[in-house]
Image (cartoon, rainbow, N blue to C red):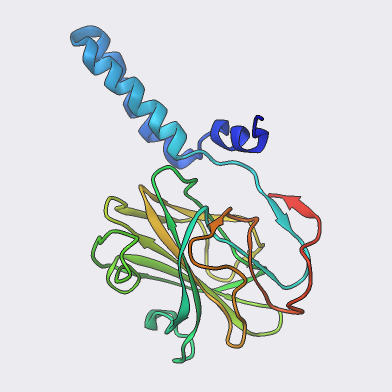
Amino acid sequence: MLDIAAMRATLSPPHRAGHPFILGSLIVAGIGLLFWSALTWLGVLGALFCAFFFRDPDRVTPTAPGLVVAPADGRVVEVARAMPPSELGLAAEPVWRVAIFLSVLDVHINRFPADGRVMRIAYRPGKFLSAGDPAAGEANERNGLVLELADGSAIAVVQIAGLIARRIICFAAERELARAGARFGLIRFGSRVDVYLPAGIAPRVIEGQRTVGGETVIAALTDPTQEPAHGERR
């Protein structure tokens, strides 16, 4: 049986951040036509890979109040209490952290996990350990955003570079309003995204679970028994 949703995600147009890479690969392919046919095939394969890597499908985000959605596609590699990165200026106390690892085969668009206002964006240089390494969250290059929620609490989402991910891109700006599921950045090529939940809020996901960015509910800020409602395409 065909999975139409999966096919649409795979065949979705690439994000504009991938256009230079696709164009560069096509130029290489064109040069190969003049000098070396093998170079043409390498260029074509490179363009196809970049179009696949930077694909940017629409997502249907649940709109029930107080839901926290996954900021990225991938696999949950850690659900544990942890201290938020110091550069984010949050309270120095452990909160629940959900860490999601993105392989090169996953969609790499990052999305806001909740509605709120971007109060802080903090970049910190670092190493390039494998994003699946437990130490990557502390040691690697990262970019963190703090969202102030309607009730005054805060949630943080941190983009973490990986072994071959050497460029973190963030489209968001401080003081802008954030909508759950809306795009705010991406990381190339292979990475990790962590969410630090507000104090007193527990996650709804477990390690090993697959997430869909902007759709999978990872926590609820209000009634924990509340079911996701209808979604909105973003």
